[in-house]
Image 1 (cartoon, rainbow, N blue to C red):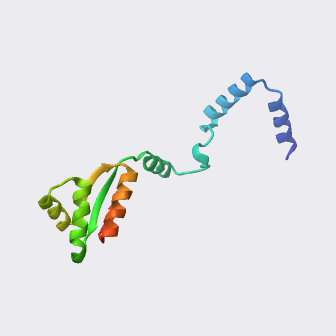
Image 2 (cartoon, one colour; image 1 turned 180 degrees about the vertical axis):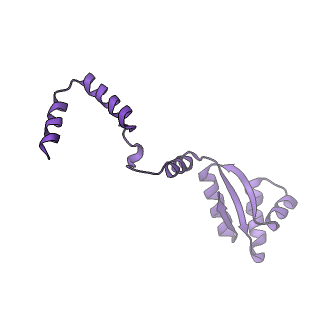
Image 3 (spheres, one colour; image 1 turned 30 degrees about the vertical axis):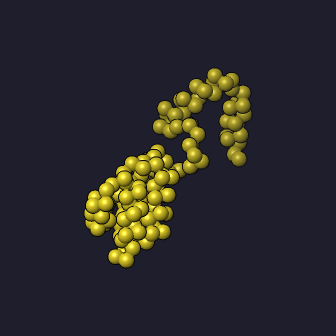
Length: 129
């Protein structure tokens, strides 16, 4: 390090806690920076990326969407859809035949994944949004 930097570091070592706090505030105001520690271990992130990550972490409700049902698997998928939604036979049949269709909205993630697994085992294609 240069002699200038060494002398600044020595000066910083002699500051009291109150003086150090005032120095940090002055540096933040003068240079328009923040001395706050980065959250989540992210050193540098674009504001849009950080906002998107926060939105994903906060998401607690998911929509279960039936994307596709092969004709030979329609009855098996229909049974699972009735089980998940509590719909009657006609309503569940209409839902399965009109795929892609949202089966259930605002489900907890664990329930949505369990339902997805059931439908995929029956032969349907499902996505969670």
